[in-house]
Image (cartoon, rainbow, N blue to C red; front, side, top):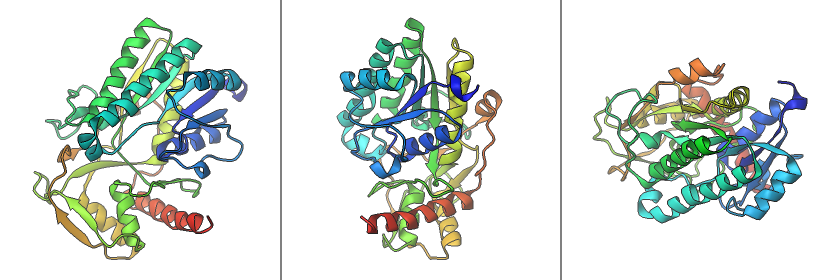
Length: 337
């Protein structure tokens, strides 16, 4: 597809962690792109110069209609939402509002405007606690927390809407997203973030005095939780390829796992951060958190068979080194005000 035939892509939550990387991947691949973000958890500095930016909410039908008209929007990449599993357990209504009700409003505006393609940021949390060591797309989706349910409800909405309207969609189910743009253009910037690698690199730089390890009695080799960590830039590349696939076959929708198919325990991750940073990471053992499965590892066979996806950063030490470099850069950005 040449650049002249590419429609503009609206990235919701494009000032956030994964969304800002998707903006870069789209721009690097020659796609016109615009961003909507309410900046509750996103950062204006994460949106590159020259990218049209709209500060607002995806529930605002009037604003969405204006953006679609001004930008000639032909596709949506939807990242806006709340993502902290324990918070979803303590405040479920926030998650059903931000992740489900607001997405329903976004889908309605998309259908009303005749925008034909929709990429959705889903999650491996829709699988709950799988009874297999490797999760395929056929693994039953039985969430164990409101975050997972809020995302699964959106997958169901998209499936139903795609049968009733000329809209195809891609639901990409992320495993644990980590790392940062290798060129240092963006990264995980949220204060108080709960992502393990983010927390650990903060500890390595002296921003935290320890890392809490939630659960040491899981049925895993060292007793701590095992996760499949995917580099955020590889994930962003998968979004661009998924959009191209949707445009090539308008009658097809996609539901795919996004991971590397290799799990690392919490202690293995902390060892990697210590190895890369040269710093000892203080560990504090804590009880399990509500809603956390012991092991969650992807089988990415469908993704690899469907898209010409070749991950470039599928190495834990590389992921950690990019996260560490961004954390150092972030300190400088904040110091400059």
